[in-house]
Amino acid sequence: MERGSGLLPERRRDRPVRRPRRHGCARGRRLGAAAPARAQPCARRTPGGRGRGLRFAAALAAALVSISAAGGAAQAEEDVAAIYARHCAGCHGAGRLGGTGPALLPENLRRLKPSKAITTISEGLPASQMPAFSDKLDKADIEALAKFIYTPLPALPVWGETQIEASRVVHGLPAGDAAEKRHASDPMNLFVVVETGDHHVTVLDGDTFTPIHRFRTRYALHGGPKFSPDGRFVYFASRDGWISMFDLYGLRMLAEIRAGINTRNMAVSADGRYAMVANYLPHSLVVLNAKDLTLEKIIRVEDDKGISSRVSAVYDAPPRESFIVALKDLKELWEIQYGDNPVYYGVVHDYRYEGVPEQTERFPIRRVRLDDYLDDFFFDVGYQNIIGAARDAANGQVINLIVGRKVADIDLPGLPHLGSGITWNYGEVPVLATPNLRESVVSVIDMRSWRTLKRIETLGPGFFMRSHENSRYAWVDVFFGPNRDAVHVIDKQTLEIVKTLRPAPGKTAAHVEFTRDGRYALLSIWDMDGAVVVYDAESLQEVKRLPMKKPSGKYNVHNKITRSRGTSH
Image (cartoon, helix red, strand yellow):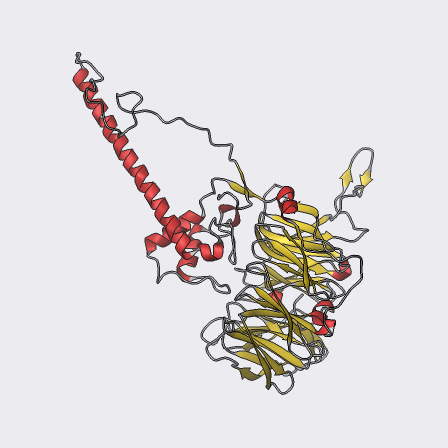
């Protein structure tokens, strides 16, 4: 671990220190050092001395072979480290601790078999930014690289209470609730545009489509910022764990804190009091005070046997006053209540008392056991059911939060991107529509019977799907494959594609967000010389084009805080 990195190593105490044995006869001399001019033989010629000499020669030869092998192993380790640095560190971090890609450590790879790791390195990973390396590395290098990522680090990084609190930076918190606006724009129709190309955010007026402010962010922001209930504050999470709080009224950064080493996403409670951060490394959930980003609590993510897990995602469930947490490495779903009168789970059996335990600890955890992992999920409109899927599962599953168990299977093969799913009423039927990260299809599901109404064929796997209550259309991109420059527009009542747009041929077009009234749809061109393209949501004609640096996502304040059915939350 490099000094000054901010990561404190935890010494491994299970490895005894061994002093090196000396070989050879000249005591105090290093093996391989020049011999003294008059070195005396170690053994006098005595009966049997020749046999002892032969045995010594054989032992010396074996030692030299062993040293040579050790040197070869060290060279091989150095070579694979160089391969990793050249091809992998840019996304996964120099120390394998994660960056734009996840951390590559044994603790985070339990669900991935080594043989599957070899295939992933060679062929790439569908539904991700992981490319194939079979055209750059030979078979031996790929196998060595796969072995390398399963090698434990000499020291495990620690990121706990001391490190989190020491990282906090206060740029200037507002005094009280007084809000001074530095712009004349409608605060409910602002867009926050994340430009990953040069690590900036643009605040965009949703009425005039003019930028009103632009500022630098932490490296590699996660695409989904969260908002305070009144829309004044926006919270960003970076892949390397930084949480930033920005004032959309005063147009200034307020505070920042590093909640993890490799962070997945975050959520803000409906009452505006708490932010919960989901980490891949360490395996933890971090609760922050949403008013000033001070640390409230660290929750270790592990089952009742002490087996830990990465966190796939955390989302807020407002009617339940709780955070819902999906775990990457455990077949469990967690519900963590943040209200002032939480329900505590578990029963006490004692000769003096039997019943619900007297608990006062904040953020109690309800554990829901699952049949399969939950990598991605989506709420129904009433927040009573969760529709989830695992990366390698044949179907989706419906988990009812009231009874705490699976109640249905859904025909969702491939890899549905449920985190980008949307809902609307198809006639009188509430439906869920989700793109698929592995198959060229959009699935439309009846949310009463949980049966598939239609599979809409597309030009390729998609990542984002968006709509608005005031629009008759749903938009879905073709994020992966040769048609990544295409975006389909689907009629929500006929379930047919009515138009395919190509705003920048040859460049990835993805992620739509509507204005608060649904009159306009904003689409991103994911390129360093990219743009936000504004469309009339009814005529589907281009209205304006704003040059930007790889605008990965745009987020409308009103649509987010009112939890529009046409966008993600």
